Amino acid sequence: MARRTKQEAQETRARLLDAAEQLFHERGVSRTSLQDIAQAAGVTRGAVYWHFEDKVQLFNAMMERATMPLEEDFEASVSPGPDGHWTTCGCA
View 1 (spheres, helix red, strand yellow):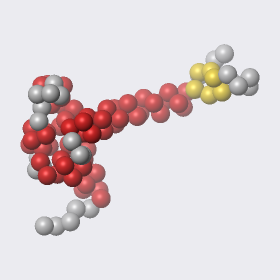
View 2 (cartoon, helix red, strand yellow; view 1 turned 180 degrees about the vertical axis):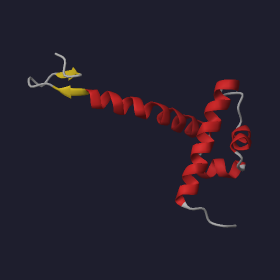
View 3 (cartoon, rainbow, N blue to C red; view 1 turned 30 degrees about the vertical axis):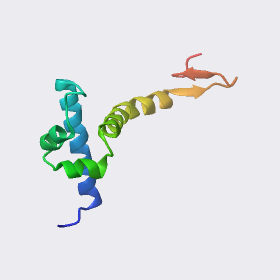
View 4 (tube, rainbow, N blue to C red; view 1 turned 90 degrees about the vertical axis):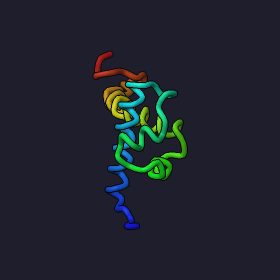
C-alpha cells in the first residue's frame, strides 16, 4: 500500500468532517454510523479510525472546525482598553 502524503491525509480528514457534518444534519448523530461517514467520504472505515478514535472525537473535531473561525473573529474584535477593561470594536 502506498504511503499518503501529509496533504492527502489532511484532504481525507476534511472529507470525513464534511461527510459527518452533512450526515449528522440529515440523520442525526445517533443514527449515523462511522461506516456511513466513510462511505459518504469515499474512504474505508479504517481511514476513519486512522484520523479519529471514535464518533465522539470526530464530532468534536467537526464542531471545533466550525467554531474556531468564530472564536478567532471574536478575539480579533475584542481588546483591552486603556483602563484595562475589555472593549469591542474600539467602542467604550
